Amino acid sequence: ETGVTQTPRHLVMGMTNKKSLKCEQHLGHNAMYWYKQSAKKPLELMFVYSLEERVENNSVPSRFSPECPNSSHLFLHLHTLQPEDSALYLCASSLGTSGFDEQFFGPGTRLTVL
Amino acid sequence: QQQVKQSPQSLIVQKGGISIINCAYENTAFDYFPWYQQFPGKGPALLIAIRPDVSEKKEGRFTISFNKSAKQFSLHIMDSQPGDSATYFCAATVSGAGSYQLTFGKGTKLSVIP
Image (cartoon, rainbow over all chains, first blue to last red; front, top):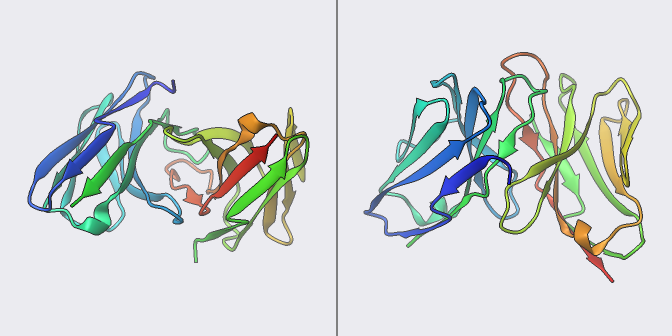
């Protein structure tokens, strides 16, 4: 285990539903990330939090809403998603935010939007 | 363009053979090049990384070769084993503080057959 847990592991939702993804890290890291992983595409960075402050929002649609209540927890709130949002959503954490800081990934949440 | 191009998309290697995955980048500001390994149902995990001041880095059966002038780097897996079957991602980043953004390749699915 990497020390980064994600729940749920699988989620099926309709386009009108509201759901949340949860990530927790037990590594004492200060930075947390949300990535989207789609087949045959590079991992896409969605959001970055450093010391609970959002430092990056890579032009992600507003139907994705992150929340970082403390340095150990990260949420991704989902509402009125589209079928093309179906993907594996990965959470990661790192000690700092330099390029040298290794990012530790959770196992991901497999999201299917019907 | 902040792209990292990775090839091949998939690779089948006999047990004991050498697996070679290639990546090319365009942004000359990149100065740190990690490789991630991802098993099914797991998140990516750092495998090995290199800085451009060296041309090669070896860790066990895994070697990164780096060609700064060609802006290319590759991963060699010697004596490939069935347990190496996974998807491999190359990445590139700028290593300074606050430079958390990893630019990933699209991944190579490696299958090592007995």
